[in-house]
Length: 244
Length: 315
Image 1 (cartoon, each protein chain N blue to C red):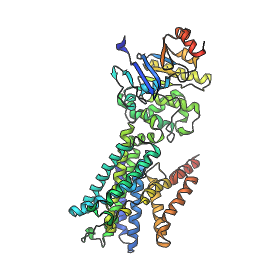
Image 2 (image 1 turned 30 degrees about the vertical axis):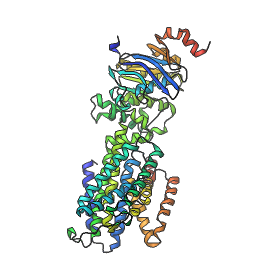
Image 3 (image 1 turned 180 degrees about the vertical axis):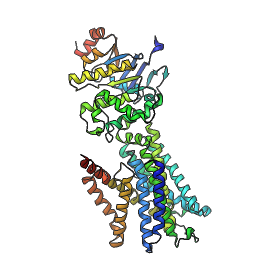
Image 4 (image 1 turned 90 degrees about the vertical axis):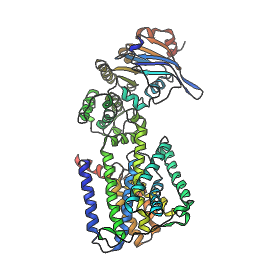
């Protein structure tokens, strides 16, 4: 069973000074799987994402991607292996057009593990923009986008890296119900392409609809991991969210 | 325009300009033009790190000085000719840039700027105390007697060489700007973390752009001792190089190779005019006033202003 894990996080601990943000977290994702990662604010979800993506280094534990230990790898190397993420607070390349924003991961990440002629890069970027519904804004400067569009761009840029695993960090916060559905459809579509997705989200409707499995982090520890219905029924999870 | 075509056209223009202007009889033209071209190279070089990558280097004078003092060293040691010192000065400054990159590029924003400024001060003190290259007394570098291409005076040659070097710097800057790497640098400038998470090898690219930027600044300095025949540390490491090489791209526009070129020609020429008509003491004041004006009225420089105007017209 463990052999087929795409991402295998074991015993990961991350401290900030005296504060332990992650405490021996185990977490596993199979190829093409859709996993929801939930937990109250400050429970360590984003820290876990940062450790997996390489923007933070974990002090203890191992992180394996496709069987390879990636703990020592710089973030850009992990993206090139097929491990992409979107940011909770959108970080567009503000001086570039929306289209050029996507060309960066296409050129620097996707091309490292997929055949993509340089003439096809723009074409591919336009295709992805079409998927997320930003096609008509391709030539606009990304710094001037609305918050909603920036979130879509954030997701599109992660998709442009052609990942095997995409980590979506609160892509839906603040979106309307129909926009949430759009993004859900988009992320679900990735499954058909064999892309595994970790969805970090507070919008429970979306998480429940999307996830095949849900993991719950509370105060840096994983307190539950299993199929969505049983996890939300778990007394410990209810306690963490609602108190006693 | 492809890189090759641009390179051929630019170098051809430089050589043609160098040839045609030799007809000018006023000697002062060459002295003034040399200085303006010096700033074209410095501004273009600075912009590779400052404009494309977003790291503000306050240490331009350090690399300019390294170029100049490499010339002094090679002149003292072997009476090395101009082509040799140009290559040597460029390489030494490039290696120094690589060192600066390794040591400081993990610093961001203002911390990097301060570190680069400190480097200029450290090098200044180092040269002041290094007797072989003249120390605080300064050093004489005599212009060779026989001048190639049948040119009447050495300044004519130095000016022509500077023109070709400026063209070279522009070709390097433009080819970086238009390359995949240029996109990576722009991504770093906009958001370094997002760039890294889009697969851009940020540290490698930053070190590379620091190295190229510093090497070109060094190149600009190599002809300087020949130009003056005499050099001393406080003129080689003058803060005005640092200030000008930041101000010129800011005024011209930092997003493309053309910005520093326009900024340097504009600001350099104004400074030369004021120096002749009023006083050289006014130079830095003019830079300051222009900077304030541009930062408030056209924060993206002349090129940014032109782009905005074009976009408005296009609608």
